[in-house]
Length: 296
Image (cartoon, rainbow, N blue to C red):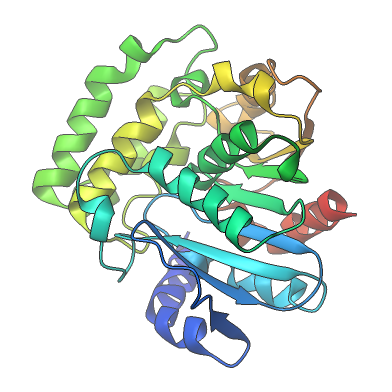
């Protein structure tokens, strides 16, 4: 855990430098008040979408490995990290962000891009794929469920998690991301399943508390399982797993498989032993191997 914190601290500190470096260039012709996109590399198109409280910096290791093989489109949501919130400062966030990713694909004339989304970014990826039809080539969701409460129980409903979501919203809105940085993981573990996936992410790179609170609330309460039959692109689900039966991650196999059962074609499931929520940082080599299989 200490190693992960050091890595994330270094990523957060180098965000501006990395995004502005010679290997990356801003997509100046695309302007959005919801998302920021930078491109890097050459080759078939790959869109990378980060999770809650994260920016494109979390993909640094992946980008370094793939820039020579793919044209990377590195997405960050405004209001996370050091990005000003702009339009994300009020109202719903995730649906609008997904709409902007679809607009980006259309305006940049991307040819059936692959999409990889982590956590909240995976939910955005699901929305994009459901609405874009065959204009998305393939989708990988990383430690992300179409419905948060499905990681507690496959029979859960929005009403089961609504009170918890309200409390989490208020904690972040009024106390800031430090409130869940200190208590988040324990709260997720208390709920069971792999719900530490959401709570342990708060505060990694931080951001505007209004955007963080609203995004967390939406991640917890929106059920995208009904949209799964609309996805025509092949889907790969990657998640952290632990063989220790005392770990909530021991149940990850069944929980994720049940959550994605409504896809029109069965998903490919890749469990990464030894990883928790930040799969690409916890087990970078194993994660990159999964990405290469996904892109092959």
